Image (cartoon, rainbow, N blue to C red; front, top):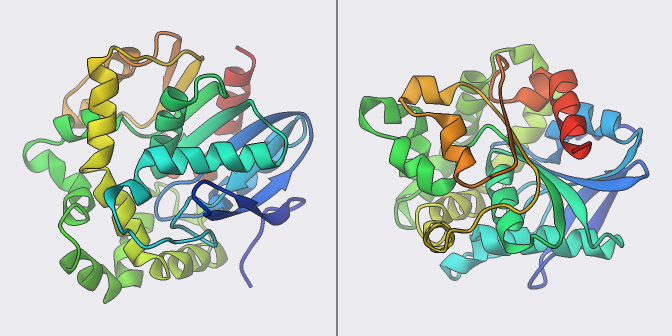
Length: 292
């Protein structure tokens, strides 16, 4: 049986372009949308969501192409562009009656949140980002042998065919390797949750790759256009990340400050799966963001 978020209702919500998103919804109060990362589902928020639900309505969707959400065929680069995935989130929240909401994303979900904050400043009231740098900056900082940490970015950027075959033929080993390598505390992802992540990822190989492939193409074009236009976030922004700047040789806070004038940048000693490894810390950071 797939684990669930205790006290939350599992439902299906309309996204953009006819896409349907699976989501867990709970709590009451001002709305907060939480977007998961790779190779996970909305279940990664199981600890944080319950804490936030004491004072907020919390909406945890599976992203387009992930988990139990629809996985449309990548008939063009726009299908898994973060612009369309951000539109999914806005539509899903609207279906629940929320035309304004706070938005927090981790990993791939953070890239969707980034795009939503730029495309929908009238809708996103507060923006939380966990453990990424923006797409443009990500490709610029991955240089030399240190870029090996992001080898999967390069693999899934390749044209359709080879990545799907390679990953599909070794799905559990591939996706499991990230759960092993990126968690400082393996006990934070118990066996039943790990199994749920692996099942969901193995069933979504083409769409997951399409999501990553978009970040090596159409997402860059969208972000470059915003950078060229001098676009910045209009809402308060909170970033929590591991000290990637020290590891890869750049100033992470400076990178984010160029996009976010109202920035709270924090480093954590937790691993990449920080919402599961350090839920009290992440809940506190989100509550601090919502109080701004």
